[in-house]
Image 1 (cartoon, rainbow, N blue to C red):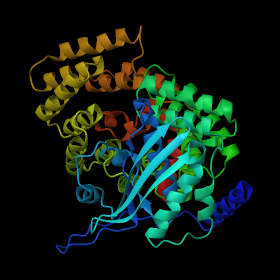
Image 2: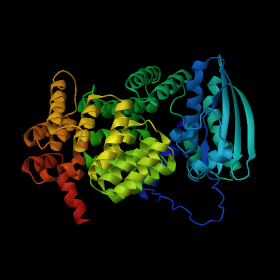
Image 3: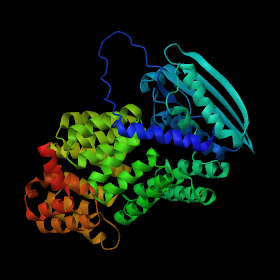
Image 4: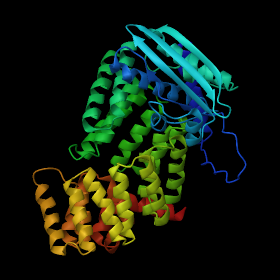
Length: 507
């Protein structure tokens, strides 16, 4: 298909979507009847493709093929495609198709393998009806590497055809549209995504290198710009990166991606989060809504939008939004943990505890999940339980912050004195003179021992760093005694949250 025509059709589709208002989905209500219900065949999981290449380092290509097919199929309106994070849980086999389908609540499963050598490809595909365990379609493709783009389109069209879905409007154009026609740039982009998905600081820095190399080859590769933006946005929350400067760097890459392709949902999502870092709450919300409009099943957009709504105190909307993220990515421990934080700030503590336990079933060694559960127990004054969770965190990550938190809970159950807690906090303060310690964290510790002036000094520093978590302190019981203090209300006003809160109350 002519690339210009495809892009024109896509723009027309985007314009119609924009004029018709946001395309919203309501979270599905679980069926509580005892009758067996067929799984929805239009809910699809693309399982991680097996790497059959002679070179094990080509694992990135198999993973990239999986992620690209998920992305292409997600552009078909009648399909609900499970996100990569949940599908990746089943990498390496060991589970039956029926077990996977019921865990992900999908009626159709696409699985396959990739063999890449020199400039050749062999891709084997199987489309399986999870209700009957029958093969709907299977095929093996032997192609040149340069044919990968047309092959992805062909597979998507065959999936739609076998599920009796007729592509409508600009869908054919959308699944045909390619962000780059250069196979070398594409290869580098896949390597960038491979490293980005690991989410460590070093892997994110490596991802940026690969994305930049892709851009060097194809300066109009919008997804590569968006990949750099996403990498900087995740790095912005790390202690070794200055939050505001790093997020603003991400903003420039997101804007560049959207200048090339204004209909790129990933670009709008990246821009939204960078605007949130700058405390442009209204602008961030518009960009999240635009991303979801373009790609209703995009779990990252729903997830990050839910966190924005939480910062604004709109908890009911936030919980509905995170449920939509869960539908698209049901086994994501990050999304499950975000739900715990939402429920806790909404003071729905019993639900938060239940959700935290479910989150830990997905990823038992995820420190943030244990930390969030400890925080819920703290709010309920269940100090023994909070101490137990914090001990697990310290065992997993012996960071000075967690060690100090452990001493605090030990004091609460009579194992340590208040003086020992203050010594631990003083140690953190001294540590902050030679290495980065979040002033937000220091502020919280100062509230626990009722040191008011040092707390406000730390809050001021956190404000100067544009720490988004300041917005959540309005909902933390430890800060309730200070909510009407002029120093606190002044910070909220400077963040622009007072006007939004008043607008929400009037609506």
